[in-house]
Image (cartoon, rainbow, N blue to C red; front, side):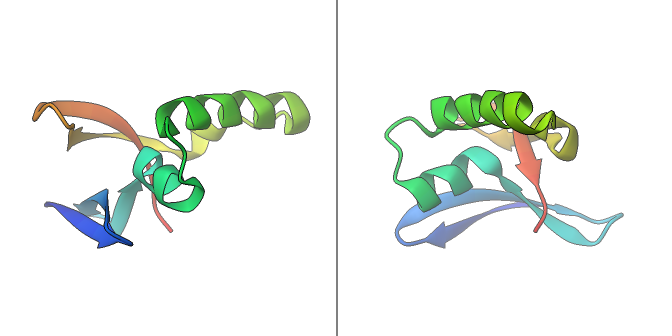
Length: 83
């Protein structure tokens, strides 16, 4: 089951995992809501590099790639995380 949540007039794509019984949220969408970045995809990319170089942690290892509907209407793999 996929849904879109609205937060401060911005869409956040979500995915409900039946097996784990929890919601997953598109990281790109959350970054856009929290930072008002004009390019949240680039912001997330740079943040992953910065955290890896400073802390040695790869943020992509704590994310799941889930297929969510993109702005072009196609289902695309998207970095997602739970709360």
